[in-house]
Amino acid sequence: MKRWITLLAAWVSAFAAFADEQKVYDLDITVTLTSRGVAEIIEVWDVDTGDGITEWYLPRENLGDIEVRNLRVRDEAYNGARPFTDAGEWDVDLNRRQKTGKSGIVHKHDGVELCWGIGEYGRHVFHVSYDMTNAVKTLNDYDMFHMQLVNPGLAAPPRHVRVTVGTDAASLQTALDTTNTRIWGFGFHGTAAFEDGRVVFESSEAFGRNSSVIALLRFDKGIFDSPAVEERDFQAALDRAMEGADFGDDDDGSALSVLLGMIAAVLGFFCMAGWARRRERRQILGVKDKDILWCRDIPFEGDLLAADYTLTRLGEDRKKNALASAQILRMIYKGNLSVSKDARGRVEMAFGSTPDAGEDPLAADLWNMMYEASGSDHILQDKEFSSWSRRHGSRLIKWTKDINTAGGSRLSTKGWMQGRRYTPSGQQEARNLMGFRKFLNDFTLTGEREALEVKLWREYLVLGALLGVATQVAKQIKDIDPVLFEQALVYDYTTLNSVLRSTDVLSRAITNATSASSSSSAGGFGGHTSFGGGGGFSGGGFGGGGR
Image 1 (cartoon, one colour):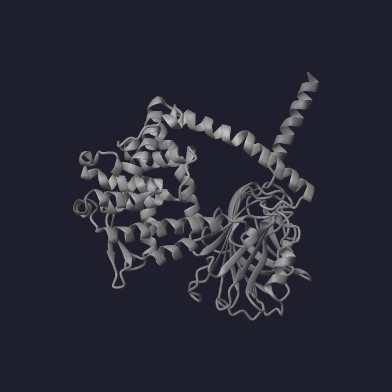
Image 2: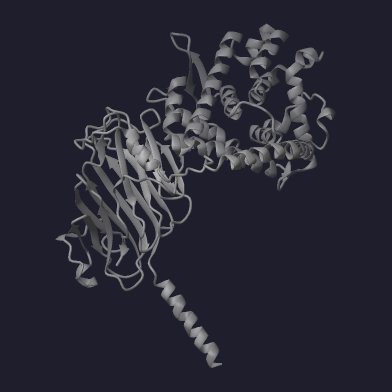
């Protein structure tokens, strides 16, 4: 019995010790760069201090010509919006009570330590702000921000980290995007992306003891006027940072391993790909492809999300983001968008009512993005959306990722799919979809011209865009009856072709932006970060947290 009591006591003691450990639930850092290259930094630490410590501290070393100043700290749990008292040079030997409500800086030969008292033990949300001068370096060919913003060796590694780098609206009018900036992230597993004119680094898994955040940004000349001049080219800094880096999309193995991998891939493709695709299509359709007959009924009750999901599952070859083209056409015919031409004959789009988010949430999101891109006059030209897309790559990535989820959810809700398997009614709709594609390809030859209902022609065109054949459909409808063509489709044939080109340009802007934003960070457009590499940075240090 004594043995079990001893074991229980040891377990309780261990649990209590674990419960009292420091924890960092979330760390959110915002870096605002001024025209003179000063980094105005705000860090928000959501922490549990645990017991036995008196202060929280952040080492900032490897400063060179950088000066750290204007430290301000507040604690939501202690004094809300009021800043701590600035104690000047910090005395680490004071007790917890003496440090409560105060902050200060320890100056060392290799940098500084930003310090503040924790107050009571337990949960706190510390807001810490300070400036780092000369954070942007003026190089020969570009300007650069290369900073370690989260140290390795923290007493409690954060569970989640987000770092945002942007420009000061008061002194700069330039948003950061792929037209003027390249980005690389090192020291952690996560992503780097352009978002709303800023750069966002975000962790995808909890930090370990050796995790850090090193941000490297390259800027075109003309954005900053920093006095921190370094006589070197950016490529020299990038080469140093890339030592030991691995962004997860290059195979640096031996020639033999590469060759074996290629052989295995080829063999795997020939052995499995064809069989797997045929099996997948057979499960979705319920019959062999040769048994599909043409069908003039609108498939999936006109649900674009369900149809797009099914086409993707079937492996149909279409333009990327064909869904966007189809949604834009449907919004035009529903009055959510209206089309006109400017003085030079270019298509412009004006905005009516917002699409019903319950009917098609992705269409509503697309409408909102187009509306934001249209500027103060709310008249959208193609170039405006392309420019907006380059600055909002992460938002468009989310939109494209949501397509698959929304389509699968719609199929399940309407009883067309259970789990991943199509129900008998879902298989029938899938067969109708493939039969409808055959119908669109040659309905002028079917002998059914008289039976066509003019009110369906708009839906034929919308679904033609989803299937990638809208131009062919428009021509075939014109061939059937040129007079009714304009009455049914609102525009004359020439104007409609301009509209179709415009929808294609808009959807390609989405494709281009998501491709750039999701491409490897090795190219500087964002994507995955590298745990290794990043050398040559300023700032940072080792350690930090409660002590």
